[in-house]
Amino acid sequence: MEELERVKKLISEQESSTAYRKYVRQGRKAEKYAQCKNDIRNKRRGGKKTDIFKTSNHRIASPFFRQILAQKSSYIFGIEVDIDVGNDDVNKDIKDILGSQWGKNLKKLCDVVSIWGDGWIQYWIDENDEFKYGVITHSEDIIAGWGGLLDEELLYTVKRANNWIDPETAERWNLYELWTNERCSFYRYPATGELNDLEKELQPISFNANTNEFKEENFIEHDYEEVPFIYFRNNSMALSDLVGVKESIDAYDEARSSLADDIQDCDETIFVLSNNGGQSAKEFWDNVTKNRLINLVSDPLDGDVGKSDLKLLSIEPPIAAKQLSMQINKDDIQDLGGIVDPSPEALGNASGEAIKHTYNILELKACQLEDEFRIGINRLVKAICRYLGYEIPKEQEIKQTWKRTRINNDTELINNITTSVGLLSTDTLIKNHPMAEPDELEKIAKEKLEQRNQALMQAQQNLIDNMNPYNNEEQRSGVLGTQIQNAGGSQEEES
Image (tube, rainbow, N blue to C red; front, top):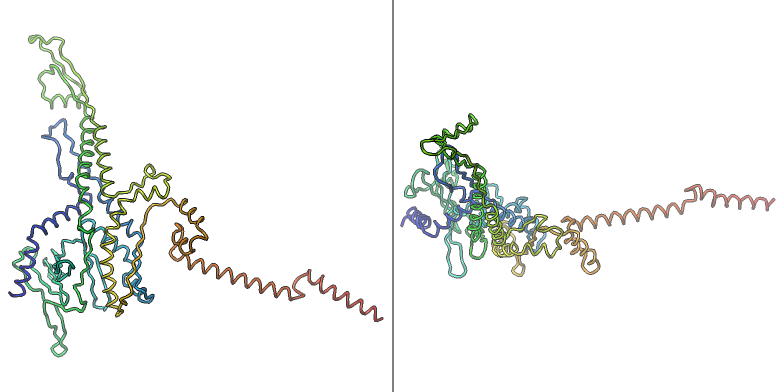
């Protein structure tokens, strides 16, 4: 089979599969909830509207899922993961390559896998021979081919970019990149077309100095020794964090919106009229709003004398019941989604152990993600070491240091550190002190060295002062005066 036809079949089978379509549908839904575009925004309430009393239609979307994402990424990656391969010089080079965006990229990847269930990092060597890496924002843009039964091996990836605009022609294209462990092949078709229109996208791969022309192919070869895409899961089952909480979020949105509708609708007064002279509802309302009049007419022929009447009727909305429903669903969302309520009412002046207890569910989710991310981060570090030409010794493990970011009772923590002086090392105490900075040990060592130098200089000055008889008035009047007296007495004895 020709290469182009083989690629068409590969992409078509993946994109048309039921599992892939379900995956894309669920991921896009989670993205909408992350943007606070919940399903409640697509619903309408009530029947046909009239000119007088309009049925309210509040569609209030709660930001619970966005809160779940923010707390999770900040809790796990508020302090970036530190890497140690056992060589200080290589560690510094790795840190420089990961760059100042390392912590931000980890948070971004955490959000992606929490929304989609999984995510990808791509790495490459740019035209300046520098190692680069980036987070794939939409996991649906990657189609992966796996081999092996138990030990999964990534055989290829297809990276997709829809509606890409050619800067030279302003034409829109759907682009595909097929990556293997040896090369990357490029394909495309017009954004208005179909996959059957797929064609090779030519790239300049070499320059001929004799002809002054580039040789063009639809592929480039690389020496990464593997497919340069690293896979990350949210958990062992690659499930989105929206799974299990969506129904409770929808129920909360429904109760909240319905309550707002009832309050607004029931705020209107209902007029109960007897014998209003046959006016239509519109005529009656115009009379009330414009003329401030209400016509009540009795027809003696019908025996209705004295029976004309006007009553005002108001309905109390079921506030208590719907508030209870909202509270029940909010509790479910917090428990299932791992949300920590940081309000003073929830924490107050709680002890350190009580605060830790509120993070239990979030910590369980964090541990699941950490187990999956450690594997991917190791692969990224190994790729960087290959680029640097450094081979990690077999007996040396890649050490990753993960730290959590959470609310603490600082007073209790400082008291515990104070009582632990002499029992634990200074290094351990400082690392756990809430006010300590990352380079606190270096600062302490520098301050001690400065104090020692100042003390030494003062001791030297004191020694010089004590050895100099002309240094101060007391010495001159004391030691020198005695010498003069002794000298005078000797002269008198001689005479």
